[in-house]
Every structure is written in structure tokens, then in C-alpha cells.
Length: 261
Image (cartoon, rainbow, N blue to C red):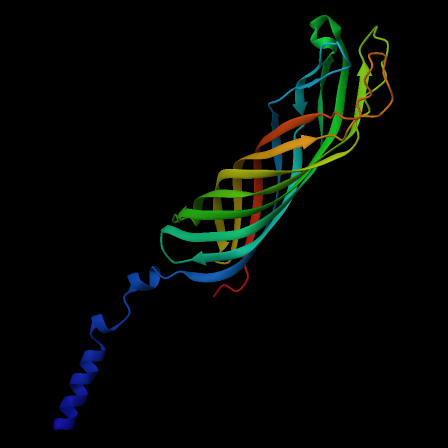
């Protein structure tokens, strides 16, 4: 009889709530999983610098102005590690390495020779492309009943920028000059992005996102100019064009948690 009492007491203790794992404790434990993400989008570029190139001793600088850059598309992939949990607030954190390839665009503007408005004599352009490699951190802030998770994202790393294929055309009634013939230039710049977006959980391990971000991609440069002497006494062999590049971008991304359980 005594043994039966002891067994009964032990059974009751094992079923007392404080000896079981409470639901809030399970919800507040993050599970880890490797993830892959791929996306595509469009960058709306901005340029905030002009160029002033001296055409020769004793002459005022030529002003390469009204710089603009055409909008361009891009694709990207990200690989990293995600921490997720079954809760509404801060349901996921992701840390990864992002690679972005931006398709070729074009920088364009006009040249005021000798920095005089009455000598707006040429239009010019050169091709621009970039590739970026960044460490990115993403935090989903809240999970709604509709499986929507707004998030913020930040990233920083290197942007590999290329300027090439310089061309210029004289405007109407202007006699062509010897073109500076700027060559191909490659420049590595520190870059960063900050952005916001919304994840939609198709299922627990597959998400699709719509994202906006602002990025600063540093400097794009052409190569040095050609060595042919000009009438004003300069051969452009030690000068090049240089512009700052920033962008507002929108993108669609798909994320897959590889070993999610």
C-alpha cells in the first residue's frame, strides 16, 4: 500500500505545470538555420559631383556638368545564417554575405569649355557598372496574423565600380576637338545600404520580400585620357573623370531556410 502511495505522489508531481516546459519558454528560444536568398531589382541612381578638367597652361578649366546616370537593373544573391522563433515580436534575425551585380548603365552630361556658358560645346557619356560584396544584417520586427513581417536591413562592404567607353559629340555648329579619349577605369569604394521591406511567409521556410533601400556606392572613375597633344597644350594622359554614385533601389527577394525544422 505504501508503495502505491509513493507512486501516486510521484505521478502527480510529474504532471504539475511547473515541472513541464511552459509555452512562453519554447516561443522565446531561437532556432538556427542556414539560408539562401536571391532577388532582382532596379536602382534609381543619383550623382552629386561635376568634373573640372584643365585643358592646358593658362586656360580655365573645362566644366563637365549636368551629370546624370541612367537607372539600371540588378540581380543579387545572399547566403548566411538565420535565427527564427514562434513569436510575434522579432520573429527572425538574419546575418549574411550579399553579392550584387548591377547591369551596365550610362553617365552623361555636357561640357562647358573654359567654364563659360557660351561655350557649351559638347555632350559626353561613358558606361558605368558596379558589383558589390557586403555583409548584411536583417531583422524582422513583427509577424502579423497574415504572415507578413516588416523588417529593416543594413549592410556595408566594397563596391567594385567601372567606367569605360567615353564618347563625346559636338553640339550644333561646333567644330569637333580632339577627344580626351578617357579610357577604362576600375575603382574600389567602401559602400553601404540601409533599407526597409516586408517579408511574406509562403510557408515557414520559404519567404518572399518586397524591399526598398538607399545605397552609397562610392566613386566611379574612367581611365586616364589619351596622350595626343591638343591645341591648348594638354594631352589628358594624367587626368580622368570621377563621379559619386548613390541610388534608391527597389527589389523582390526569395529566401529559403535550408535546414529549417
